[in-house]
Length: 337
Image 1 (cartoon, rainbow, N blue to C red):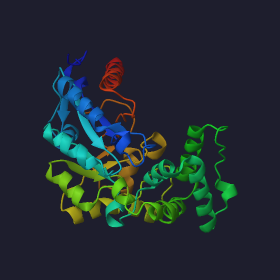
Image 2: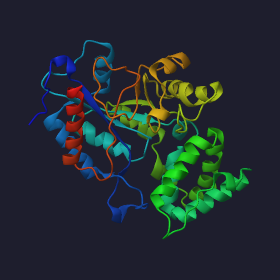
Image 3: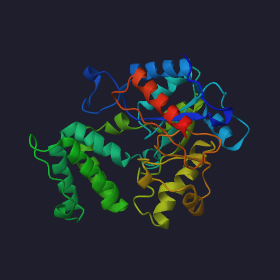
Image 4: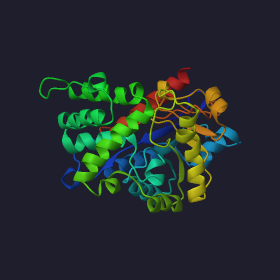
């Protein structure tokens, strides 16, 4: 049964989804602590979208914002996006292509230009590899060796007594909003080089796409966009002009120059309100982008700002049924406005 609009055609629009980790079966997963959907779960999601929604390509999303393209009055659209340039996204790209679906894949350019992982991926794999308590020991050592006081940025955690999820959230807030971005990058790369890469020499290929895989994704008909250079909060990190150029402007130019494709879309890392610029502020700082995606859970319409588009990010526990319930809720809230 198709979700139908309760008002006029002009109120319809599309829902964008933002996917991250896609994990193999636990028995085959070298880092089983990582949370993510399975490819089988993704396949179920795709079957749902094809039954109930109008699947949109990146070009069609652009045409809704800037051209005459609309969404059928009786049917909402769905646009699929994938953030972080994760290694398993090439498998997702193949699965989508086999179903005739095209998507956006947002790339942090450090994985191609520097052949280094993005900031949160170091955190996720570090905790998956060592457990939270031992990972925080690596973190404190990195702070000291980088000349920072562990006391100023420490995250207390006692296994069996403290809530690990609260500690992880506090750690992420510290790295994202308290430490200046260049210091966060130095600390995380210290952990990556001294610990993760030392113990798992092939870990970068486990974490991220390489250039050949990105080229494969493009050959399959998908589009790529920018996810900053190293995955920083573009608004929350208070980037100066040099940092903004490095993290926001140069990544677009690098991808276009290196892969010889147009790049017109930005996906804000983290994507919450404190991480995203308003469309006016983004245009004041750069006019490189025509589309920009947050993770605000809203329906995108022809009257939405193309530089403040919303997305819903599924979690590892989301089934096709829970996804459909969430999208239906978003549509109903949209139609009540």
